[in-house]
Length: 94
Image (tube, rainbow, N blue to C red):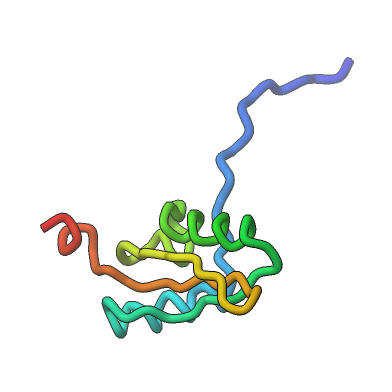
């Protein structure tokens, strides 16, 4: 007879990519300054990326160490995402 173990799946663990970690670190060294994160093939993907950065999960590159802002802009048919570091949550809530 086979034993079945019933349990809920473990929560997803963020796996930040090295380039995201490096980019977020560079932004923390220059708070308030905008930087180009990248260009996307569609406006929808650019908005999705900006939303992810603004609402990043804890443990991810943009979800650790502070609060980030992200904006999308279209320039000559290219959908760009710009990001800036705003500071720690206590600094931003002032």
